[in-house]
Length: 188
Image (spheres, helix red, strand yellow):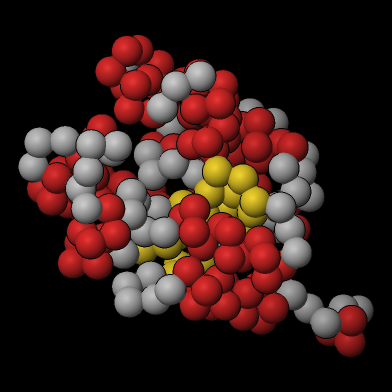
């Protein structure tokens, strides 16, 4: 896999489980940083011409994951702003490699973490999240058990979103970015 070509130092990628607030945090963060934002789930729906739920039903999860892998690779290569990835995007080994290369190039990958107690009211465990059908709480917990180690491995920053607004999450990310960025007097 080739390394991303977008300016990684000016891009932030948000990863995390369904309901952690990636899309709303991306909007808030983009506003604070004066950057564009993009949601790869929206890119997938635009490419497919239908909702993610419809893709799962009509074409299956493997087709969705292929579309997702392509959407993430394209966004990392071309988008110089804030990216919100779908909750399962990080499970693809090629995407993990891209995110690792992106972080090595100076990019920030933020794991937005949330507890089950806080995610339930956010998502309402509705029909628009196909992987949560059946027993949504048990499915969400199973997804987190599987995905948490990957989120933690690819992330360069870990932010807990429990009880925080998207503005508070964005403020926390901005503060962390500023703390990591050397000032002109810090550079040799």
